[in-house]
Image (cartoon, rainbow, N blue to C red; front, side, top):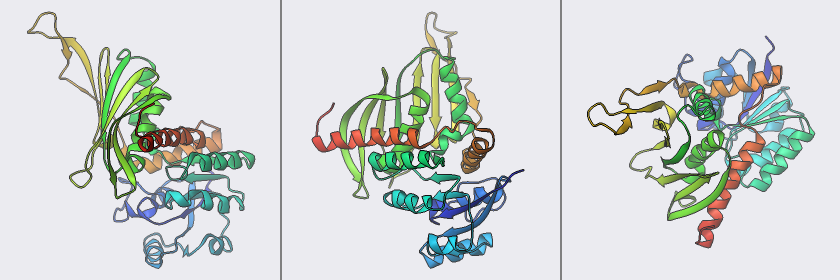
Length: 327
């Protein structure tokens, strides 16, 4: 089995932190762990300016960590680069990486601080024939892919409306669910602001909004992260309902049937179907998809183009918030 040599740039939560205390492969939610546990990759090293984070990486993974990319590249020759730094640094780090002719770059979401920066990144990646993957991991997770199949096959009929909840900001967490709905339903054709809301941490807006995916309205309401985290989507269909809840750790499908006690009433069957989901190992699914893309030319479910589309939706919302009116 071919192995690709990989490094991680940024050793925060998604770089190594989320599953740092985990052992084995039951939970794989960081770049570092996924590279170690997937047989198609060899984790060479990592980069982070924070000495403590470098020491934690070296202690757990028994591989070297460097304060900057140039220091690492003097010692190693990676083919795959993960970008796990803050979003405002994505573009500049990506430009640094391109000098080393990467085979692929796996970039955290959002792709960049602006759609314009994202388009530059995508264009340069295409010029160098570098695969650019953006880590909207739900697009790679088996349960989400199964729901997409059900929707495309109209197993519950046409979808006529949806609603969802998010917390911790539209950019930070809400974008995951906007991107997932684009994966399921297609492009956003209209944006409406229902309530301006507040800003999470003084930076990330938390509006209540309605997004139209073609002619399907989906209402998104902001929760309060300090009370509890929330992330869910409910889609109402002619023949039932899809419930994507607990951030996607639970997916339920309800089909309609005739109420046995009230003649003429159609209701949701309480005997729900549970769709298999494996979100606790999401990062492994991302790397598996990238591996199949590199070795068998399989299509990537989340790439530069799709991530730019999601960022453009976010920018439309933010623009309307600034103007104070709806499109």
